[in-house]
Length: 289
Length: 339
Image 1 (cartoon, one colour):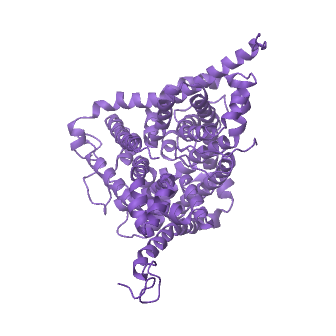
Image 2 (tube, each protein chain N blue to C red):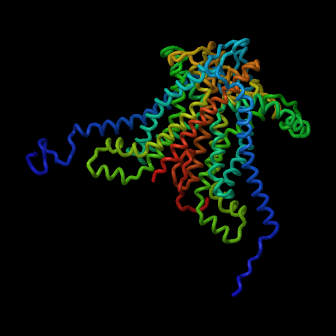
């Protein structure tokens, strides 16, 4: 029995196929070029500023002479993002619990989901304005303070936490919930002893991704924290943060300050990458069924 | 122990929990519901306050705040069309450059590349989203602007016959640089959503195309693209929303000149940039401050509309499944027809 003869693919079609495949591959390469270039310049321009004094001295705010390092900026960023996480993560997981354990497909739950999605799309600067209007202009506990920056960042992080947590909580097999309920456990114990522990690694991943997002934000901090150069570990005062310091240093006509911006940017990107890597490592360890 | 086999004092079945032990359940349930409701209340409250704060501006300038072309702080005239123009021009540039690249990266990763490369490539494209906007701004100011200037000059003089694109004298910061940086910044989200919807194309559709003798590209064109088009459109719209609202990267590379730039490589301004840049000086003058709040309100409404449309497209693209908002989760599509 001979095989049926197939008409071969015509040269024209084959050429189109090859060209289009090539274009798609080229497009992918083009997508990666900016990443490579940005990382290259960060290391090339920034690595030389990283030394002991860079991390252990505070920026002085001087234009000439000793300009200092970025210690207070790193501390400020960690503190503000830390407080923002303390606000956003519990609330975010709480809302996600409501959506998966109680709301499910109810109308109100879907409205909440929709607005959480909408929140993801609100520009960060608008959240900065919100907090400025509500907390800064009304002089609640001072004008510009670190904790107001945390509030603004937590608004940005909240939708990320909610959406990521909801996805993870939905992955908890309903059989586990039903088994616990059948054994007589009340709902709150099912949630606290079965659902949350099972989903914990995933919840951690989602939260860390939100932390990484909050760390790099500049705009909301401009309106809520302002900037102070000295070392303040006090969230109730103006603080320095890495993104805002980079922003100020870029705008300076002094090339030494520009170099500090590169060093600080490298530090910031490294911090964010570390958080991202930890998030991915946690996610990999927890391939839930 | 109990007075009868099935009831306890108080008349409830012994299998029923006591009111006291049921209390934590109620607390948890209503506490979580209140938390969810608080988000809605908060958003509504913010919106109302923003309208309230910008009311002065809209009362004074009316619609000319949006469509008038004269932003002059020294004369206290705030007609913000140059800002809106800059926002839209840079975002459109970002879409024109960013979306095709994002889609080809998504197509390459899902359909063409060897499975071994799939994971690493996805991570690399997603890493673009991890770089903070201030770092893109830094890179834009000190690397991209000076390196691009010669190319921009060549382009502007070679294509001087095309209105708006050519003919002018490029400046260091300009619309194009801002748009290019925005393109890089929206790339990861557009690509992630495109990947997600492409993953939902039923294997049967693709196999059917291949079985009928289609080449890979023909399979992509006939099976993958039509099926995922609404989702890709939605992803691009989400990217547009990001581009409209991006602040710090844009304020650093757009030039901050409150005029309508006469050509692509000219300086301009954007709604978000004006807020960030003039904020500290405006804090003392209520009129100026209110104008910036009004710019924020216009920006908010603009991104809101774009996002609502985007969500609609994405929901349609997922064929009955709920949107996942780019959290990197594969959505399993229901077996639905083409669109």
